[in-house]
Image (cartoon, rainbow, N blue to C red; front, side, top):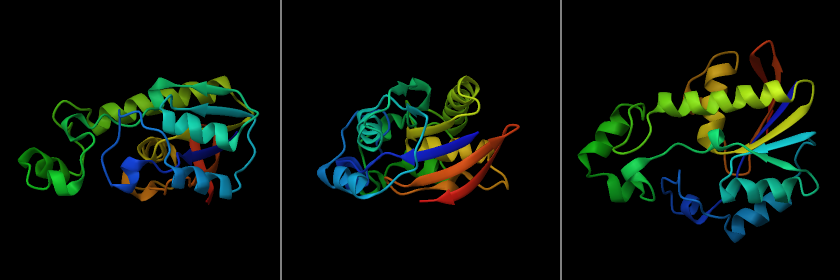
Length: 185
């Protein structure tokens, strides 16, 4: 099975380096322009997070495809850190503790990395099972890509080793529950 993982285009929150998880913001003009400038691999099926930024990105890349929305592929819930950036949070004790812990614990009123990864990977497994033998594009969030790749990609790497820029992503093959990344774009 062929896979395409695409991180949504840039948003205003991305430009301001804010933690944007549950905030449902659209692409900014720069993000739209960058998506339209690139060429992306063809897909039989398009699966996306229901957040505006992912739906818009999917519609720009695959304008003639039906988009299947999967809430389980949403970005992590950053809780009290949502919408803020490092400069606004750097003196917050709970934020410093979260950063020093590698972002594994749940931010106040947010989601732990394990909760997030379990949710995303469950959605990925469901989508893969429903679309065996097809080329599936996942238009999702950076964190979602990192969660799925960390859990299923070989050789094994850490969560943050799979970071991709807005509008970027990976092509991959899924075989017997293992993902082999074939290219980065």
